[in-house]
Amino acid sequence: MRVGLFSVGRLKAGPEKELAARYIDRFAKAGPAIGLELGKLAEVGESRAGNADTRKREEAAMLEKALPDGAVLILLDERGKSLDSPAFADFLAGFRDSGKRDLMIAIGGADGLDPALYERANATLCLGKMTWPHQLVRILLAEQLYRAVTILSGHPYHRS
Ligand SMILES: C[S@@+](CC[C@H](N)C(=O)[O-])C[C@H]1O[C@@H](n2cnc3c(N)ncnc32)[C@H](O)[C@@H]1O
Image 1: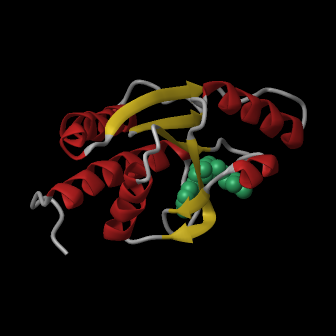
Image 2: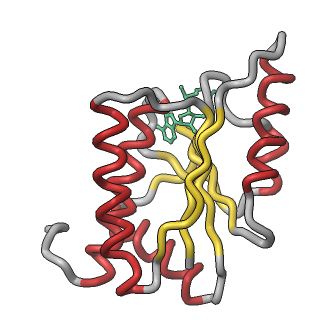
């Protein structure tokens, strides 16, 4: 199964971009052995429309364009469901084992994600109850994807 990321807000060159890329690269290298491949990495700039509802609608339209046909859509939101790392690994493996070809995880911009996306999404997950900037969310998610692969493959990176 290909695991892609959609992010509103571009990462500038610097330590956040480097760290996110480091974990994405580790995920890309270790994932195929357990049936998880790196999918599409879609990064779009924040909409500049006049109000938050319009901005979120425009950003949601960009997400719809980037979504592969039939993809599982997972939203990240501080009000979402909290999973520990082994449960996140099982969550991914469940979609993989049910034969899904693509799964895309979406991170919103400063306004968050459009409400319509929550109806379309297969699940909404959180990385704790605090609100993080999208740059840090990208890093946290990338690390958890790599960690999930190590859990599923029995690699000692994750020690519970
Ligand atoms: C700065 S936050 C936007 C907060 C916005 N006020 C809202 O109501 O959603 C940018 C994005 O980072 C992600 N995010 C921030 N904190 C998170 C958390 N604790 N768990 C999961 N995702 C989070 C979400 O995708 C969010 O849309």
